[in-house]
Length: 416
Image 1: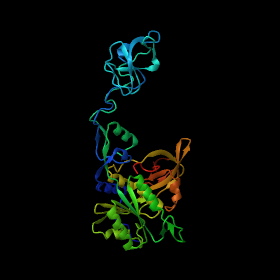
Image 2: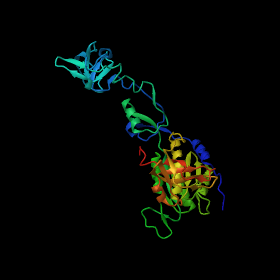
Image 3: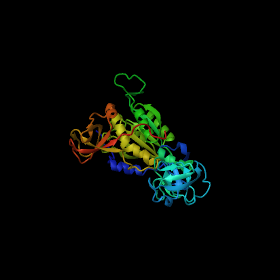
């Protein structure tokens, strides 16, 4: 058997990813920002709020006028009127007076607190009884209390969430600078594969990876498209790769990454003048036969043909690659949960092993149940909630040992 060339550790692969050039920036309307990655810091152009506001329905007062108020001896204030939402206060608040005010209403000059409506009673002569004292700034949102003008509110490299867009809208920002989403071409290789819609004859299998990889790329914020599928044929594979290099920043070749005599991905890569194979093989299981290459300023991944291996390699390395290209940190952590292992799991030293698990409630917390099976069994990924990692220097994990479960993301990525 031919040896793997340039086998790298996972840490070395991530370091190589950091060396890849990032994609250029572009401006998009705020409404299209969900799931996009900020290309530059955002500084607040104004104070938020830009006027002092009531945080409760009640009466705007001078706090000192309520000192000592109680049920037995209420403070008596003169009602000067009502401040409606969207109204400027009609006048400055004088000592011994108050204004009725709604939540969000603008506090009049001279007022420094709001007495909650339930702690008051309005008499027929326009006098308001206050039964509970307030301190300065009670139930008041000050000007700039949420965000101060000039403050950095969002940082470059952040993936925008709904609450982030809400903040930008509150600040009147209509357009944002974001990283371009990586166009990602997906192609499948193998004499034995047919389309998912076909009825495969004996010895053939449906092309699962084209669907799963496209979905994973969408979750990663990419713009994926399927180039097609080809048999193990050098001219056909090179033609598809050439098309991918013209149309995309990232090319994912499913299958053809091992050292078998009929696997042509490596040969095709090396046929391009600007090609540089950065890694042929990663010290992980499953997924060792993975290729990472650069062809000019484009990135090509040769992924294993087995569906589980391809999906796990995508999660561990291709997703961080897409993150990096969009300006995010490669080391952005997986969502994780602590759990206790339900059984012993053996592992061969010398490589990191990633075991599929599902979570079930147990007496002392979550229990992680390993789903052991060959890398061609997609049902194990369907049942799995995530992965546990076994270090390359470890010979396995014991039943009852606490582990970190790296959770799979749920649903489509925002911004797609």
